[in-house]
Image 1 (cartoon, rainbow, N blue to C red):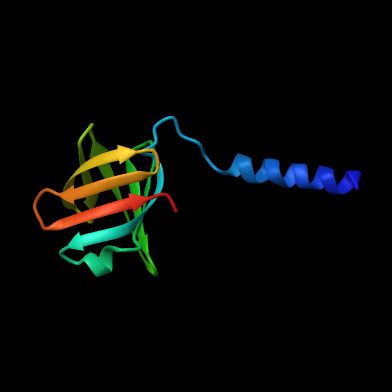
Image 2 (image 1 turned 90 degrees about the horizontal axis):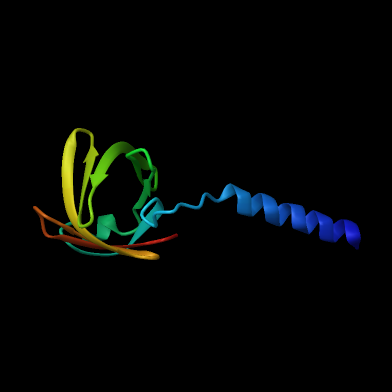
Length: 112
């Protein structure tokens, strides 16, 4: 029984240690859970991963793309394949809302 408890404790510690915690809630993985406007159906389920060094990865199914981003308190610019996409955004603990500044697209992103 002691061995089982020790093993459980080690596994719990390993799983917790693998998940990176950030001081800024923006960083990490986000998935589009709601989309409206242009291409709404194709955007739902897309995963964005933001790193602290300004890199972003975007994935949906077998399609993946790497790029960069910049942001301030209300605006994020994502650059993918040389194309800049700008969004106004609001952020709470586990939810972000984006609105494209040049197209009819609104998204809700949540932690997976």
